[in-house]
Length: 335
Ligand code: WQD
Image (cartoon, rainbow, N blue to C red):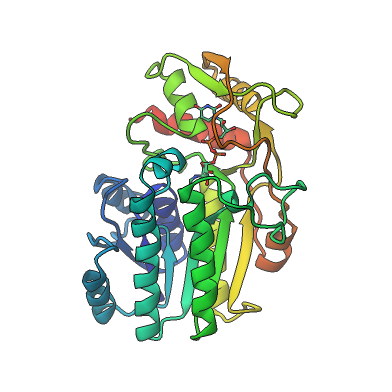
């Protein structure tokens, strides 16, 4: 049975990926310092799949702890989710973001090289494109100067991995996510926002649940059909499945180069107002909202060109926006 380390495996995308890995017969080891998750998620994963992943409460900023882990655990692949990910917070705390997101990545790559571990999947983001000049966005779209330290850590992370692959046998795939949303069909795992949600869908479901008074729609004067900003919302389970495909590609040596990049989206863009309408349709719940000014740093529109991921990676998203929004609502009702 192939063994895979999932860092950040108790997080939103990480936990959904652990479930799909176990479904595919992988033995999963999780490293998570619970800074943005809860140990309860480990129980939920176990109750979904019937198999408890091995769990290590390690802070990846602790170089010695990372060395000790790799000295005693041999794995066939690593999927690296663990990182701080709040765009706004990164502007307030840039040094913490660089220390956590870059420091941890370097320590893992150092131990991979020292232990001759070569299969690495990196959690990246479409944020590296900024506002792309052309839509849909392909993997060759130019990388724009980052709008936030968070986005910068993704750009720098990709560069570090590229450089590491030139001085070792490292085989790496960076997956650039568009907007991950939704929850597992069991409603046992989902997005656990801590505090006031920064992202759209958690705020929508909390407004529908009466936890938030009303949703502020950031900007209604964008150059889009209805004036509100457009994003490519992808179901987190489809996103999780893409990680299995990418990991198998590396383990089976099907990769075409030592560093590959794939955009993971649905290829479809939806505006904020379209999301609200879709949510109200599938849940029958009303979402109170008001149109307010744009949010600093937001782009007008982004959605993926999925051709390369479909043809080269052999993956495409299967679930719809409606499926994702309904699953997010069912998850919210369990909280
Ligand atoms: C989506 C749309 C907002 C909240 C960021 C990162 C990306 C990833 C996902 C980490 C935008 C609008 C939102 C609200 C609103 N991050 N909105 N009212 O900014 O596209 O992407 O989060 O993994 O890397 O860049 O996602 O969900 O914050 O916003 O109107 O209360 O919803 O303006 O148009 P975003 P988001």
